[in-house]
Image (cartoon, rainbow, N blue to C red; front, top):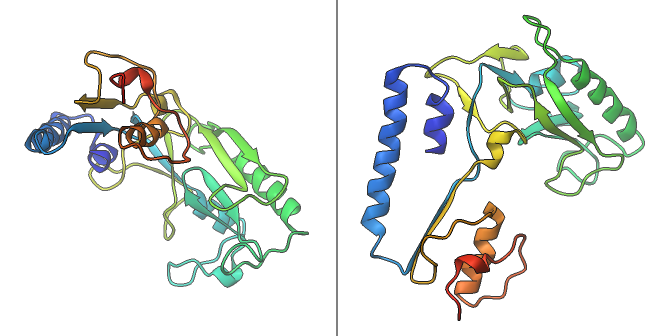
Length: 242
């Protein structure tokens, strides 16, 4: 469903809408086939979805400001100083942190400021809309899997892509060929996912406020497994005595 809605949700015709509905119907069938195979069933989405009109290729921007180099449509790590890996995260190709790091810590602050200036100035040439609504930069190199620069918000109708190669920095989506919907980056739609829980260990008819990171500790509680993970046990969803 994630892939299907990324591709089709933003297309305004009945064929696309019906395909999304059919996807949900097939998902319902899949779940029904497994209802009797386990004591509990948990269904969750990792985010909501929003229509987009244009894709913003961050690596192309980094390439045009001479921080990312390509060799036959692959990143040339020996000559690349920064890269975008998705999820709103830009990382500097730092020595002693990245596998092929070439940037030393002394150069790091200057490089971050240079990237930030270019991100802040980026606008759509067709309508002069500023692309980014919120950007955060670390003063010190980030830990593993975190961003040296984190893009926290983009203007409505725009989405970010980590694709490299022969693209412009900003391109209109192409129905049935590129993603026409995305989960934004801390937009309201990101917070509108779902979690459904049914089974012998769950209360019936409960509506609670929860987050996707609460699923793992809740399941761990059911199996009496002690795990140190983010999130909380959804005790209000569980039958007492577990």
